[in-house]
Length: 227
Image (cartoon, rainbow, N blue to C red; front, side):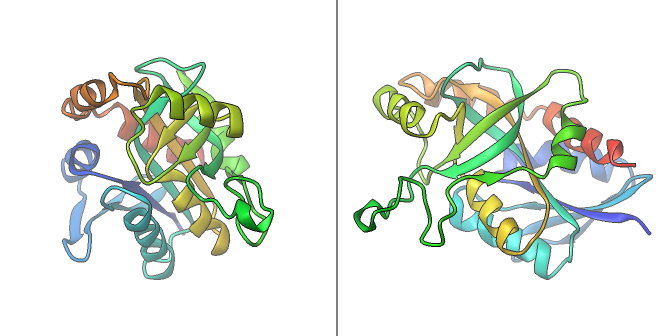
């Protein structure tokens, strides 16, 4: 029996390349409500891919939908991220850990990003991560998430100091939190689009509008490596 994987893409331009690959190879639309959803089978897997919408709430909802309604065995997310340290535009990274940088109950003695239940950093599934790191050009990186587009050098430096993250996006750690709660393996693959500073908006827009297939192909390569 084939394993079932859930793919999450935040916006239309991230989702479009996957739809082109899937629909050209026998995939089909499952629904367009509540989320644009495609079903696609490969030689070794069934994939349910959704366009979640941008941000923590929409992406967390998508993860829960994939796990509870579609009963996927694992969740992978693909999208763009801003570099915080060590990374450059065009790099593709597999997240090793994930933290919600904008979650703060430090008034109650918790560390920044630490939940009431004591969880601060969510870890990638080791099997999925190891499969990703066998792919040429994919590098490990620590990822941070917040419900805003990071385009501020001072805030970037703060997050580098407090969380030691290497890249930042608007979905990953929220999805990881849902997957941990529902005991579902998770991995994020992100392509660096910008430097999370005052040039970030233009750099992100430029790369996003290219609607490249490379990231979707990496996600599919991870699934193939799970044979």
